Image (cartoon, rainbow, N blue to C red):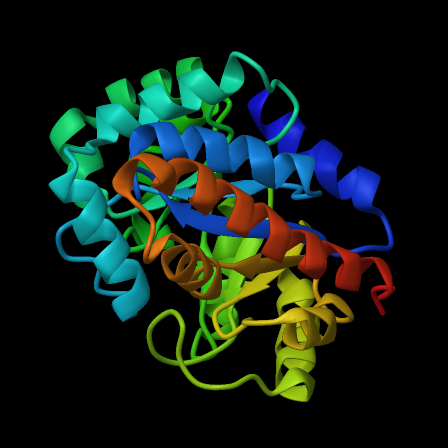
Length: 277
């Protein structure tokens, strides 16, 4: 059911952009991650991107780097991430979960073993930041056997040739990185994003999500008018971190979940007022 779960979301959303938050698995704890995932769904999230913490997340800005460091310090591993998804699936069989991470931990586990284990845990798709589409043929059969959606990043600098290649192999949705640089940087130019998304859709016949630089209701609404999904990460993590400061550790899980849910509810409310062009 994996890829179908993602496809069904975009069918349901129809004229509205899907809300896709990113959190780092294990930050502030594994138990908190499960609680945050459920709270996010209760507040209207459509797809969850769950970050696999990695020691050298070169595409990520400081906010997500620090979240990775905190999660690794708590002992989070790739197997631990799959365990979190299993726990989430005990109560939720509808919301798609996409893992986002780097190739090294997957290669250490083995692509065939990873894709099978991810599918069994209830993962629906995988975005491997540093795995180029040109090399996907080597692992395509594993993704297909596991019914796991291969999701790819498209950058502002991606050539039409690269976008066409992604369009031939990607499933679920593609993720357009709206800014040059790392996550959480700079400010958005909506008109430029609109042009880029229109160009991507010349070569890609699945939904286009847009992320990087979306930090509030206003920027989320602006992107929602031109994209099929709005992806938010750094600002969500900042919101949770700010909320747990001053609380004791045993309060962190509850505070992180409630602050994430509250903030995302306001974003979702904003998206309801925007119809995709």
